[in-house]
Every structure is written in structure tokens, then in C-alpha cells.
Image 1 (cartoon, helix red, strand yellow):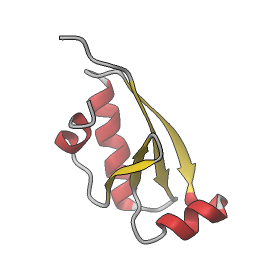
Image 2 (tube, rainbow, N blue to C red):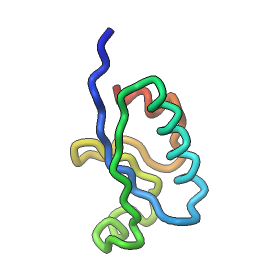
Image 3 (tube, rainbow, N blue to C red):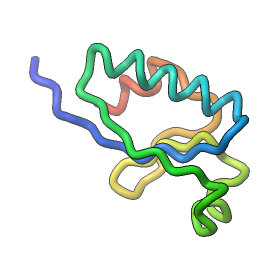
Image 4 (tube, rainbow, N blue to C red):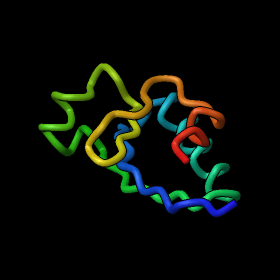
Length: 80
């Protein structure tokens, strides 16, 4: 079975425990699947802050919110 490379945008902010957990899960998934991401600190981007301040962490793919809040390993694998 061939996996397609998945690139997502990861919205986060410093000191966010759920964000740290989500990024750890993404790193674990990355060991077995072709996952890459662009990290966006919502505290340095006004538009993202307004949009996601109550949802972070947020994983967005092709402009669509795929996952937010408590994100687990299995949730991320479902992106493939």
C-alpha cells in the first residue's frame, strides 16, 4: 500500500499543553507516515488568533480544519 504525502498547517501557541501533545503525536505519526507540517503561532498572526483562539491546537489541510482540541495518534493517521 502506498501512502500519499500529507502536509498540514498546525496552529498552536506557546504554553498550550494540548498543542504540545498534538505535536508529539504528529512526530510519532511521522515515524511511519509521510507527514509534514507548517507551524503557525497564533499569537504572532492576528488572523489566525481571531479564527482559532478557542480551538487550538488546530490541524488544517488544504484550508479545511481537520482536527482540533485534543488530538490523538489515531486521529492524525485518519488524515491519510
